[in-house]
Amino acid sequence: MICDKVQNLLSPYLDGELAPRERAEVDAHLAACPECAGLAARMRAAVAAFAAFPDVDPSPALRRRLLAIPERSRRFRLDLDFLRRPVLQPFLAVAAGLLMLVSVYFASPGSFQRSINREFHRGIGSIEKIYVRAGSLTDRIGDLAVTAYDSAKAVNPIGRAENRY
Ligand SMILES: [Zn+2]
Image (cartoon, rainbow, N blue to C red; front, side, top):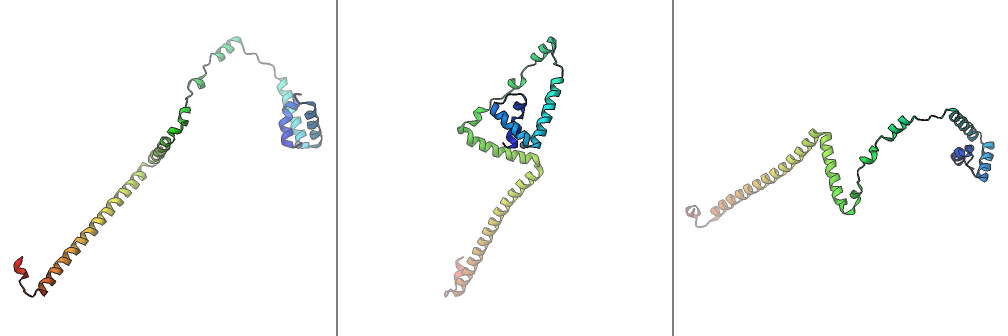
C-alpha cells in the first residue's frame, strides 16, 4: 500500500471503521513504514487528548441565542445564474472590455488622458499633414499653370496673349 493511501485511511482506522481486509493492509504497512507508524501514533495521542476533554453542554439560554442568529449568508446571496445565458455573452464581453478601460482609467487617469490626447493630436497632426501636402500640391499646380502660361506666352507666335487677359 502507498503511504498516501494509508495516511488517508488512518482516521477511520483509528476509529475502528475500516473493513477487516483494509485494516489488515494498514496494519501491515504500519509495521513496515516508520513514517506512517509515527503519524498513526501522533494521531492516536491526539484522539486520546480530545477524548480527555470534558463534554461541554451549552446552557439552554446559550443554545437559544445561537439558534436565533439569522442566516445572513442565505439572505444576502445574489442569484447570478441568469448571467450564464448564451444570449448575454457578447454583451458581457463588451461590458468586460469597457470595465477594463474604466479600470485602466481609474488606475491612472493622468496617463490615460495623456495617451488619449496623444492619439487625438496624432490624428489631428496627420490631417494637418494631409492638408499641407494638398496645399503644396495645389501650389505646385498653380506654379505649373503659371509656368505653362508663361511658356505658352513665350511660344505664342502672335504675341498677343497678354492682351486677352
Ligand atoms: Zn507509509
